[in-house]
Amino acid sequence: MQPYYSDGIYVAAGWNDPMRYFITFLILCAVTLFNLLSATLVSAQEKLSENEIVRMNGSSHIPEKGVIPDEQTAKKVAEAILVSIYGQEAIERQKPFRVVLLCNIWIVTGYLPPDQLGGVFRIEIAKQDGHVIQVMHGK
Image (cartoon, rainbow, N blue to C red; front, side, top):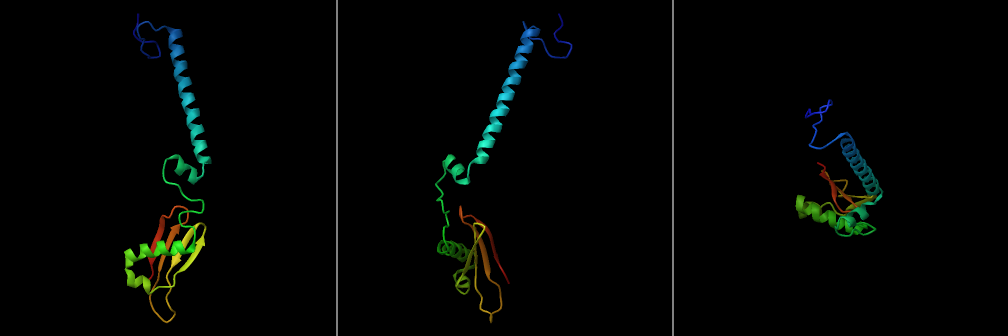
């Protein structure tokens, strides 16, 4: 008796051709089932909104209107971040702030009177979750 089939697969003790085909069939079924379940799970996750995914993962709840729902909140958050970067005095000189909501991103910029030279800050903050997208300051 040869220890290998002609195709090079090892013959385990007592494994005949029908058993070998049955085991191969079971392995193929398991792989196919795994692929189908994986594709279904990925498809289902793609259909979930960002809020549903956050809740599903057990993270804190994000309000429907977003973490930064209005202009006043955007100003306060921007000021807190900018003061820590540029200092209170530099930020105070650029008031009143200009705030615009564009594509669910709060854009807060400083103000510089026309008779003064220099640049102003610009900060972009996501309305939905409050993450800072960009901070910069002109010269």
